[in-house]
Length: 108
Image (cartoon, rainbow, N blue to C red; front, side):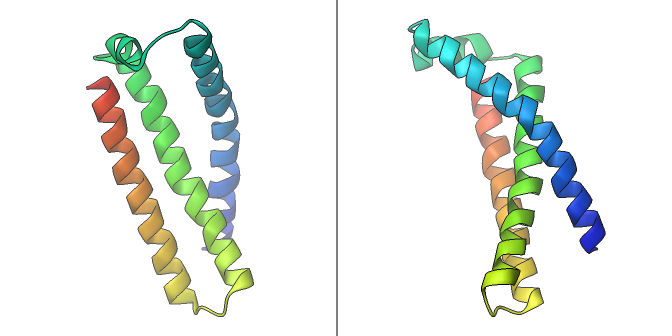
């Protein structure tokens, strides 16, 4: 299990690098271009491409972040393995649900 989580975190890190860079680039262009939130939403509504982009982003974050938190909790607290794993899984599911809800709101 540990090897699989290690690999999953490293692979999602590789995936997140370009996703974060594109996201930041798009945000900078939007802000400098003076776009309002309504104008941005007008451009993203119904866009399959942006939906796939941000959906991938959300899934990668929902995998990557909780694994890191799991490792930190195991190293820094006296919590037992089951508690740490449960908290990490709960965070993963929460991030996934809230993130995909946001993607649907922006793209749908």
